[in-house]
Length: 250
Length: 322
Ligand SMILES: Nc1ncnc2c1ncn2[C@@H]1O[C@H](COP(=O)(O)OP(=O)(O)O)[C@@H](O)[C@H]1O
Ligand SMILES: [Mg+2]
Image (tube, rainbow over all chains, first blue to last red; front, side, top):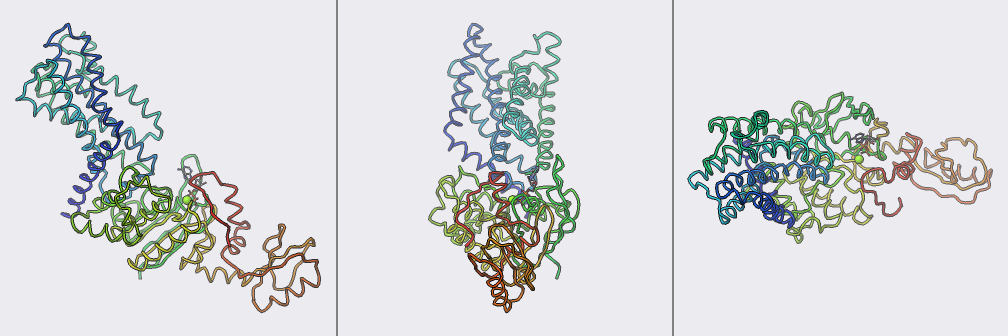
């Protein structure tokens, strides 16, 4: 029993470590992590400059969350690459629970997402956003759970998809709309009724709203709901992707 | 003693209806080297994938180390090591990092892990290359690293799927040397597949000849060969050779191959040939598994290979059969 637990923990650790090593060694990945979201910021930020500090502080958590979600979904892409290069078999044939395999990958993707988010938050503060430092820690918690949902979606699709093109389609027609039709860029308090409902049905909305709430106090949904839904959905996402992982035949 | 691997009527039909394995049964005794010998597409890899829990069988039963591959996958995974036909290394990691990854998946950590990594690297002579990225490795080095990784956690059964495929002749010999060395030092049961006849003959204690998803015969290479014939006389002639007593005509292309059951008959048969036919060329050799295969399936593995070359997997053949 203790033996098995130890093995699961070792596995999660080494899967996380592998992803970190690979991320650092892939120069392009680093560029994508640190520079690409800055471009998003420029794109969004410039248009909103007229809105002042209040508006920047509202929109920035949305941009940060978007970056975190996009980079977390990449966990699925890394599974696709592992399938392609055969490395996935090494994991599938090991006596490790699929849940650990999923958590290990999630840990790697989320670490990258968090580092990227902190970087963006700092840049944001330099250009004038005002964040509540006391809320930084719980905000981070919300961001991590939101990323876990994105990882879960990425891994689940990667388990049933066998070509890269399909994965890209998933990214474009499922993830992107989910991000844009969430609290990341839409304020439920002022959105038209039907749009507000779409946003409410989007599981990403609650994590992003909670994140923003802790960071700026500008939440649009009840905080207890943000926390409950996000915790629930992230656990579900991990379990579902572990089940899907078990079904992969290499 | 209970067999360490036991397979009963195992079948696999892929989606799309390809019947890759049509019901194979066999057993492995603890400590033996057992080989699956058959051409490309025979179902070797499919069988290995089922035994190593990567593929769910369509029908039949398979137990490894006493555990059912379907219902006790995790216990099976604990007691096996696998080297797949297609490489399964992370090229962006160093050799040592690949081994560390593996070690921790099997619960090995700390000094015990470091010591074991050193041991297996030494076993395959890769200590000097331990901290280089795997993408800089040659095919042979990668195979050796995979071998080291496969036995890292001291599995009771080691599965090797075409361990020498795509390597040149010298490297192939070297890889076998390492496999034999590993076997001696670790004393494990080895299940391997190959379509190189002479390798199976040299290395395996028992061989199953598999073709089109079915096992044609299982025995020691010696028995398999002896059962077919002792020697083969190859003759090049324009004439059509008719039945000769005690001789089996095995192949009749440009050269005719005659199987002789008893070595003492050779001189008589050669005499008859010389007397009755216009012989351009004649040579005699000991019968081999290649001949057994020809007899059982009516075709040579070599024919098959050229037919399916470029099908799937790396195919780089170095040198001929002799
Ligand atoms: N994933 C798959 N889907 C469908 N058919 C497959 C798949 N893998 C292998 N096959 C087919 O199953 C047969 C056996 O293949 P395989 O087990 O790889 O043979 P071997 O390892 O002996 O070369 C071949 O006809 C092959 O084309
Ligand atoms: Mg094969």
